[in-house]
Image 1 (cartoon, one colour):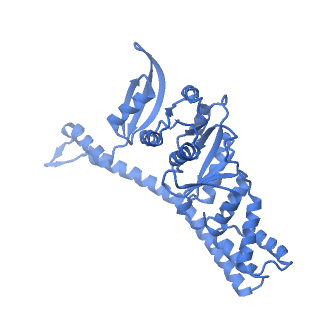
Image 2 (cartoon, rainbow, N blue to C red):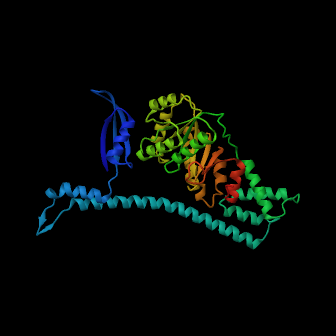
Length: 389
């Protein structure tokens, strides 16, 4: 890892210099205010990863002349090779740890599949049921809906079918959609609420792209004046990406690295109808940075927190994210990457546990097209039929 220290008057200048020196993939490790002869300044530490071959080359050029000793015409010690070997061993341990976690998730999926198989096998052998409800149960669990909720839906259908209205599987599934729809809270996507809307969520969930989609929709379709603030000053590439979106859409972008800068940014955008705030993605286990983000946002200016959850995550991961971000008291959910999913019936269980409405669903990378307002009916159709249309 290559680390450089900068003394600059502002974060914007630091970002420009870091990008020039270390490239767009550099990250900011820390920032703090310092005093200098020129007045108040900021000390910024930035870093970029070196790949193994680059690190080994640097090591050979710096160390080989004085540290390699010859015994019988052959080198007896090669620090660059030792460094490369240690780096590879470390990477191997990290991969092994990651594979262990992935294995747990795969085992859970296999267990669910086995349970589903035997459930379906039992249904086909017994051929019990009423007006095709066995087939409906099979369809629901094949979509990923838990056995408990699938049976609850089937029992509701049996109650309604006593009047003779449930005549086939299609009618039964329509009844299930209606049942799910009535169990979900609805979100109000109008701007009658807070004008400052903050997007929060773990790394890789799609916050920056979703922010661009929402900003473009409100600015171009709703004809509202929109402002952007990013507090994600850790990833240089993320700032550049948002700058590009802001320039294309034609809206102002503010960069805030701390609570004071965030307040100043809100003041400069005070005339805007709606302000969207991008936040850094962190590991859901990184409670230190989550608390730091909460301090940056402050409590003086009310804002609407929107938790982004990727539909490509496991059920366990989604519930864990929802739990850890409770400190922000988020009022609604945005579901991302719906286009990458085929079996998301477990979403019914998750939304039942989270007890927050879904306001939007994203289903692609195109800005601003691939985002839709969500309502209970659309969510129910997505759960039962994996259909956004």
